[in-house]
Length: 113
Image (cartoon, rainbow, N blue to C red; front, side, top):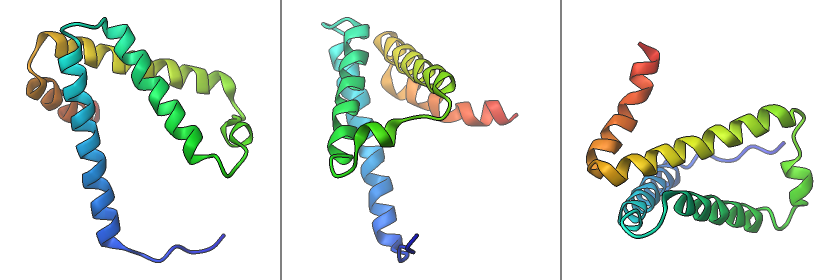
């Protein structure tokens, strides 16, 4: 395996860009919950993420890369990701986005405690 040279500025940019994308996704979901069922928004989010993943894996064999040694655990993980997204989008339907995001950011501290 080849070593990738350290590039801190690229890493910082990628983290900031990723957070920006999460903000855009959450704000879009908040706007859509007024007129579209939450389950449909979650489905669209997961379908777009899957399509993006396939594009990223186009040079490799996507089926081989996505094959899991423990498919049962992978299904549980997929369900939990789906459920957490659904619950978060459902929550932002009723409470301000800033409040939901704050609670989301504090959750690792609560789990640790």
